[in-house]
Structures are given as structure tokens and as C-alpha cells.
Amino acid sequence: MIVQPEYTPALWGLFVILVTLLVQWFVASGFKSTRPGAVPGKIDDQLSHGDFVFRAHRTFMNSLENMPLMLGAVLLALMVGAQPLFTAVFIWLFALARIIHMALYYLIATERNPSPRSYFFMLGLAANVGLLALAGVTLAT
Image (cartoon, rainbow, N blue to C red; front, side):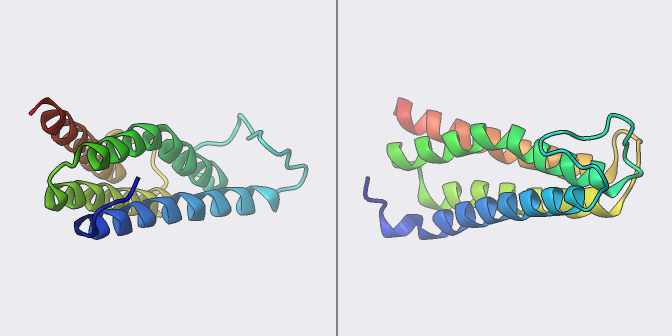
């Protein structure tokens, strides 16, 4: 598939999303590996939001949970030729929302719901739904 040049901003947004996921993976794995007796793939059930290892792990897992729908929506939008500007806007909105969500999850240890990070989770979800809707409408027309 050859992507048209007008999708370059969207592709840069996708690149930022993937780099953010990679950073989250390194942070979560790196901090967890410094714990005595750390076992790959396992997190202590006793940990909660007060512990950075827990927050880093949850940030990464949350991104993994959100990524399949976003990557599918991006692929579909590109394949059906969805309007490039709106495609880029939705992708960048998701990318920025995930970065802010990550930063807030790293910085604020709270069990409260909604927490400040919840608003950026919802913004990312809205961007995801918007991109999927754009792709669906484009496909239908």
C-alpha cells in the first residue's frame, strides 16, 4: 500500500503513538526489573497506585488495551482514503491524550475515580471513536 503524501502528518502522529508505547514499555520494564525478586511478566498483587511500578505497568497495559482499536482505525482510514486533515487531527489528538494520560499516571498516585488522567483517557477514546466513524462514513460513501 502506497500512502499519499497528504497523509504524512497522520503518519507522524502514528509514529508518535508507537514511540510513546515503546517508551512506556521501557519505563514499566525498567523500573520493575530494579525490584528484588522481579519475575518477568508478573507484577506483585500487593502493589497499588501508591507504587510507581504499579502505575508504570498500568500505563503500559492501558495503552496496550487501547492500541488495537486505534491501529485498526488508522489502517482502515488510510485504506479507504478518509479525509487526510481529519485523519491527522484524530490521530494527533489520540497521541497527545495518551502522552498526557501517561504523564499524569506517572506523576499522580491516586485511587480516586475519575482522576485527572481519566479525562485524557476519555479524550483519547473520543479520538479513537471519531477516527473509526470517519473511516466508516468514508467507506460507506
